[in-house]
Every structure is written in structure tokens, then in C-alpha cells.
Image 1: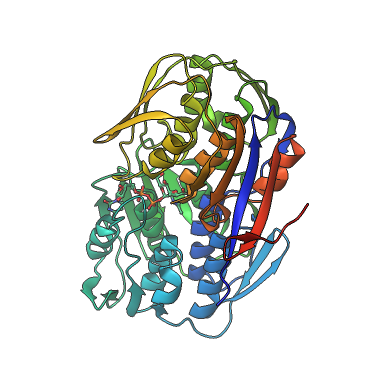
Image 2 (image 1 turned 120 degrees about the horizontal axis):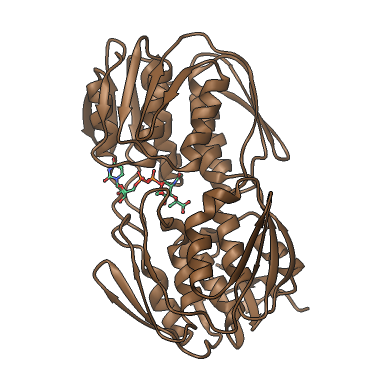
Length: 429
Ligand code: EPZ
């Protein structure tokens, strides 16, 4: 049987020049879509990016009983008949973030079943912190046959201290608390901008939210306001293009709604010798011919984002010296390293760190994306490498980057997407 595969082909090195408009934030839209489950009013969400993760979450809302219309970058969620109480494995395994429907379902229904997402390339991705929070709110939890069963006579408000500032657990529990009578306090919460954006959406729905430095008070309700909400631009896409714009000979301007949220990355880019200028909603970057080495430790916001660790590794591959990149958030987020080494990078993974000994040049090679941000790292490396790089496994990249080939072509990169059947290319430009 014919096997069609897609790949991204890049002829490097590229000197990128021009402007990038970044689309809406995937990691803000996903919890916001999940939050619509608590309300029967109409929710209009604008600046929604075109990515497979969003498509899967929309499918999940429809399976659960919501009416969802998508018109370009605008998604409208309306009430339909009653909500079902089961989030099927066939969708949850495609999108781990669909466990975020748990909060809204548990706040409205006494018995729900949500498939366990299972692990993924970057780690086992447990949801124990989510479940401990729901237990504190009165849910009886049983895990069986790959499903989490939450039963309660109705959730109750509680004071919940998260063992770790988990983004997903913060979002799941905030959604549940928003439709639970009384005041729930979440402590040691994640403060990622995408979490703040979801809290702003809940507030627009009429939920009383009182944030403080590491906690939030939420007064739940049963009636909500219709909402028309425009989501912030995607911080990780913006960061990825900033790193690409810091490659040798490149000069790029990113139009991005919240430049301050990229402070940790901007600081590291400047430390490596790149020039970065923040001017209102524009960030201009131009790279050194070879970056200076750097020391990176990923951390919850406002620390260096784990989602930019792999793209930054690719950037550091050509430094004049030795860098150390430590991944403190996920347990297995170095899958890109073996692929970068096929392109001539000199990397040594040691426990939770990778030692990056800079080389003068990378060379193009066939490589494969193993996860979303690792795939972006391969594109960054391909743009700076000499020769042709062919990247397979690009469905990973399409989960979190909107039109990346088109955007990089508009900046002057020699990059295209090719289809091949049983290894033979279908594109003959
Ligand atoms: C969100 O994942 C993002 N995904 C991730 O982006 C991002 O890398 C991550 O936050 C950290 O910023 C979305 O927002 C859809 P966590 P999430 O719960 O919520 C452990 C991308 O590339 N943990 O903060 O799953 C967990 O295993 C994706 O766009 C528990 O142990 O992240 C991990 O080691 C990848 N128990 C750490 O905490 C739990 O109950 C951070 O996880 C929950 C988490």
C-alpha cells in the first residue's frame, strides 16, 4: 500500500530578513476552550491559530455536547443539549491538554469519565496534582481501564496547595472552582501568561478572580455572561522566530502583543551577543556571526521557558565555546539532541543537562522530529546549516506552529514542504 509522508526541506544557510506576525496562543486557547464547558452562554474567541491541537480540542467539545463553529480565526462556542460526561480516549490520546475538560465536567456533573492521556515523547506527564486538587474539592476518584472516574455529590470550595506550579493543574482546578459555590483558593500556582489569559477569560465570563503573587482566590457561580474575547499572541512561536532571527546574517522584526513575557529569552539572546530592541509591540533582533556560549536552566514562568529549550539548543550549536542547557521541567526533553548531532552538532546529554560544545558550522542532513519543540529546533538548525536538510515527522511541528514554512519563506529562507510516496518525492519544482 502506498505510504504518503510529508517532509520539510531546507537549504541553508539562510539570512532571514523581514517582519513576522505571530498568530494566537495555542496554550492559551486550549484552556479557554475547555473553560467554555462551565457556561451555557455564547463564547466568542478570536485570534485562534490554525493548528491540529486546536482542531482536536474543538472535536472534544463537540463530542461532549457543545455546539462549536469555526470561521477562520474566530471560534464560537454555544450551549447545545446536555453535556455528556465522557471524554473519549481516541481524542485524549491525540491531545493531552484535553484532560483540561475535567474541571468543567466535574463542576457540572456528578459522575464523569475522562481518559488518562498517557505519556508522550517528553515525559510520563502524570496528572496526580490535578487529581489531588479534585479530591480536596470532594471528588471520589477511581482510575480504571485507562480512565479517571470522578464521582461527587457536587464539588465544594477548598484551599488547595499545588505540590508543583503545574500549568495544567492550575487551569483545570481554576475552571472547576469557577462553577463551584463559595471561595476556592489555589496556592503555589503556575503564572505562565497563558494561565493569566485563561483567568482573564473566566473573569470576562463573570467569575470573581482575586490573584496574588503565587495564589488565586476564585468565587464560583452558576450563571455566566456571554463573552467576546481576543486571545494574546503565541509566546512560544514568537520566541522561536526571535531565535531564528538571531541566526548569522539575519535581521527580523516580530510583531508581538506582549514583548515583556519573553524577557528571559531576550536576556539570554543578548547575553549570546544578539542585538534585541523592544519597541512597543515590536521586537527587533539581529544575530552575531557566532553566538557566545550561555548557561540555560528552564523553569516555571518567569524563568526560561521549557518550550524554547530545544530551539535555543539549536542556536547554541554554533557558539564559540561550551554552553550548558539544563531541563528542569520535563524529564525527557532532549530527543532533538541526537538529530542535531546528525547535523554535526557536538552535544553530550548528561542527566538533566546537555553540554553544547560549539562548532563553526552545521551541515544539512536527513533528520526526524520526535516532538513539537524538538521539531522547531531542527528547523532552526537547518536554517543555519550548510546544505540540504530534510525533516520528517512534521505532524509534530504542525501541532504548535501556524504556517511556519510560509512565514520562513517570506523571510527569505529556502524552505518548502514536500510530499513523498514510499520515499519518492511528489513535488518537482
Ligand atoms: C503546559 O503543559 C504546556 N501545554 C506545555 O507546552 C508546557 O511545556 C508546560 O505547560 C510547562 O510550561 C499546554 O499548555 C497545552 P505542567 P502541562 O503541568 O500543563 C509535572 C508545548 O510544547 N506534573 O506545568 O502538561 C509534569 O510531568 C507544550 O506547547 C506532575 O508531575 O505542564 C512536568 O514534568 C509541551 N503532575 C511538570 O510538572 C501533574 O499533575 C510541568 O508540567 C502535572 C504536572
